[in-house]
Amino acid sequence: MDNTIYYSKLQSLLQHNQALWQATIVATDGSSPARAGMKMIIPLSDAVFGNLGGGELEHKIIAYARDTAPALPQTISFDLSGSGTTELSPTSMICGGAATVFIEPLHLPQNLYIIGAGHCGKALGKLAKSSGFYVHLVDNRPEIHSRRFLRIWTQSQPQRLSGCLLRGSVWPQ
Image (cartoon, rainbow, N blue to C red; front, side, top):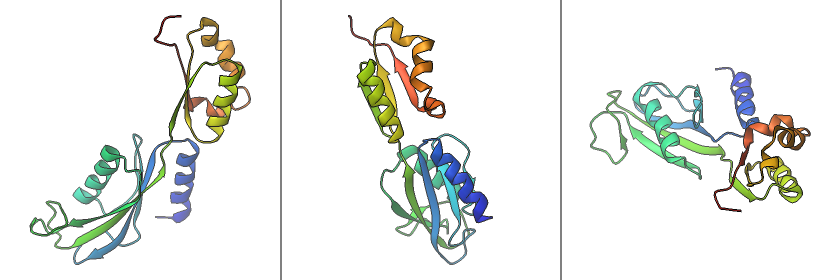
């Protein structure tokens, strides 16, 4: 895989403020479809990009990243012999070797709930968005839910609208 294409894709995904992990084969032993240095970008819901050798090994890594959403980097070693007799994470692959994978979170946006979408809430929301938070503005005033309000609030950063949510409150006035 061309590194410039891989890192361009990675940069594009990071700019869209998505939960994202990078998995890298760091070592192999014996027969394995994976080779050290192979990489894959694993977004939470979009299509993966890259290659870890394919097969069950790749599917387990993708499922693990998406199901557990690890917040810290970690290394996992997989048994590719199909025997299930080792202390490594088992697979039903019959390659005969082993592979070690480093999984690192690259961006896990934190949710920030701002109660009140008045002038202070809007200012705090803009600051939080520029700092990488996924912003939820909560307000029960009908005028706050108007398109005009949203247009004014996002005019300075229209590309950031995808990470902003405006909600009505659930408590009585």
